[in-house]
Length: 124
View 1 (cartoon, rainbow, N blue to C red):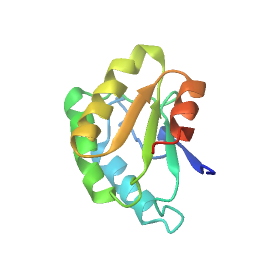
View 2 (spheres, rainbow, N blue to C red):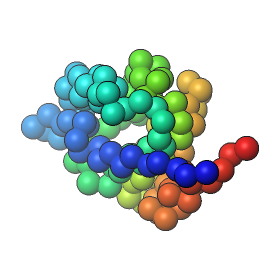
View 3 (tube, helix red, strand yellow):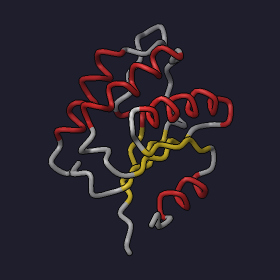
């Protein structure tokens, strides 16, 4: 079975304030636009590449973003791999855990190859 993977760069929707902290309202607005995009139909796996994101996110920010995923259930109905640098793996893993608790199939990775392998794996 063919797998379609959409790569999304977090820098395209995770926005920071001039101080470098998460601009939650701007980020939420961009997530809504992403979910409303007709090409975001939920018929593909998603690789969320956060390696070049330049904002500091607290555990509370990560929990809140994961909670917001409920609004985007259709767009994120398949697997989502969060790709991050090694020094932010704990944050990505926490976000993935929060999303899993909301019923999403999200996992954190530091390796592009491992993320792609998981996304392409057939889960029967």
